Length: 481
Image (cartoon, rainbow, N blue to C red; front, side, top):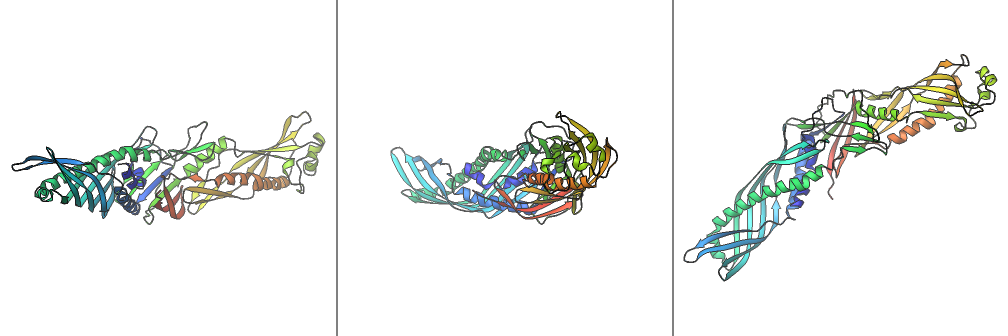
């Protein structure tokens, strides 16, 4: 019954939002929401997939007995059953608070064709048959949970099927005799199909749905050093119109994961229903990224004279610094300098309605390269700047771009006396604009992958910036193989 799974992969978009995950006290970094519009689309896609899958399955043979006066018991067998046509007309996908989803099909029709044969002692008779199965109703409740690693699990907690009417037409050597026992055969045919429908669904949930559900990337690599944790955090919040799922949404170092010292904020999502799915991504996600990149030293930099364009109005030599720091050339004649910049703490992204910004606090320390290859610190500067951030998203990920403002330097410590930092401001501005920020933007354009299920694609996108979180909305298209 593996083909039956082709009917449900899109439904997993809904299923993932209704698991019963591990208990956590912290707030989620990311909330994914499916609206009633999304559930309606999921139900329709599931119905179309199931209708296509039904044409590919083989129904089980079934046998029975009937008695003919003066002749005794006759054994019959219906075999080589296949679904010739089917119409699945009505369906619904509804949340079950605290459990999962209820998927139901009603007012449906299947036409089955096959062969029959009868055995009695040395008598062997056979023919063909058509069965019109009408008024099919199926109701499946899917209970969702999670394993110890935060991966979703699924079981069919209940399944009910009912067939309102079975109309059997037989042809062959015993057509008239079989027609005498039509009601008996139709009744058994109904019972067999009703039990087999739920049996096949139970097996398919285990063999097809569960493995598919486990393909959800609970941990997704962003690059070779960093990943994001999308494990489930707490039980879903289901209402009559939507389903919410809480995901950890924490970025971490793949080689050495450290606990995060701050918590995600409480999110209050807008009451939007125009799209099928929404993602509320809190500043926690982006700030854990900033934290791990800062801890890895990714934002630190070093400037040497060979990195400055030939026509620049200042060189990193003591001779070039002589006009505004006279003592430097006397104490360190004809020597090179190196500027080493560090970000004092991880710069946190600030979300306010319609705006994203950060204010990185940096320090720059100047070192003299001594003749014996040692380095000597001679002054230290504080660097202040405002940076605006631009975020966008496509069918599968969020990308970013930093637009820096002008830096302002302040002399914090000096072995060479007080001096003007104006020329150094020009130099550091040049380096940051042409080296550091392009390097960071190269990483940001790679993007943060959204927690997407296999073979789903977003379209009709919109993005809003709210206090403490980014709010993304989209419709979903299921891409069949």
